[in-house]
Image (cartoon, helix red, strand yellow):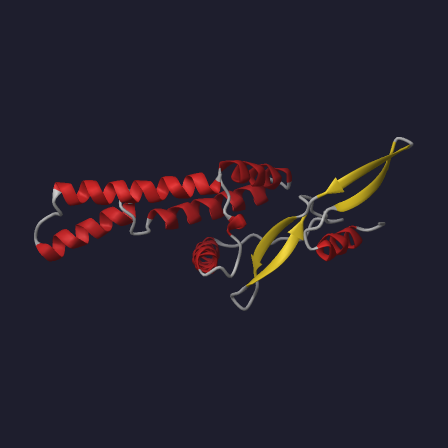
Length: 191
């Protein structure tokens, strides 16, 4: 393998099977077996495509030219990017629920920490972008109508507005216990 693209093609062609590598380092030959990890990434049509990764990325030989946006352009661009993140998050969640993509794409604290480190090593801009994506996704999740989350509280307030009285304490306790159980189950599943 003489170029990154050749390595990328070999990883994709492996379809998840271990890849045997011979590496020459300081005059000695070392043998390694890499196990590619499956990732399901969004495609332009709204579906997902399976790719295989080994945890490295190819770098650019040069820094791309950038142009600073004005304040109004920055606000409009930020709103558009936030909307895209929300749409992608909802699409990904729907595809996981329907089984169109694997649940291995759910990241727990360890996966988030690994990705944060990878983004930080690519520079401040990549790291800030990742934090923005993560914050938007967590904020969206918090608005789901699950008791114990803010979205659940909004449902209780809507019920109170329609019924003219708050839900009973017993109903609140039961619904909160169910909501907390769902959240804890998801947390354990993501680990």
